Image 1 (cartoon, rainbow, N blue to C red):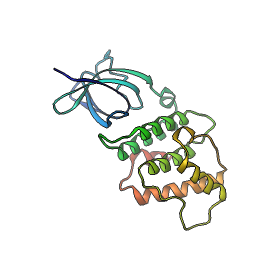
Image 2 (cartoon, rainbow, N blue to C red):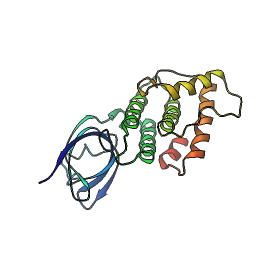
Image 3 (cartoon, one colour):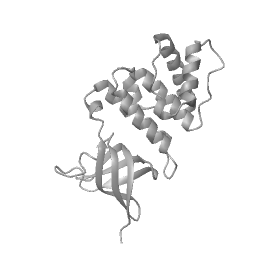
Image 4 (cartoon, helix red, strand yellow):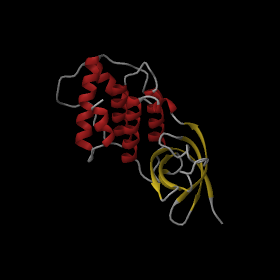
Length: 215
């Protein structure tokens, strides 16, 4: 007898399987990162066609097969349609998905990373916030949540507002992260710190980031 479970999460990436199926990777509250098959999801009229696209967030009904999860149904509460209509925002969002996929693991407690991803995608649709600032906050907080952020660099001359911003990112809850703006000078310094730490602690490059850097 098939064992069904209800999970809440977001689709990080999708790949076609065969003629009509999809394999998706999701970040979930209950199981951390999981892979799942969605049978017939590429057929026109399938109830899983839209639900198994990147950025889709909601509740998924899956059953546990012998070797994998299988998506049976989904109730999507947020498709982040605003990102689909914003060329620049979409690529920033794809980078966030890619970086989240890099950091997260199956069966880990990834609730905070899921929350960070969700709030960061919402922030990208906020007209009053710089996409670059959102990116640097996301990168730093992801490192914090994964125990890799060393704090302010010892070298360099930093504006006191930059030091305050880094401290705020480090210690604030995810819900309160995107509540401030900075001057162009501070934004540049945050970018220096985030870029340096990313090159130092991440052992791969990201295709979506290459595109973002050329926007």
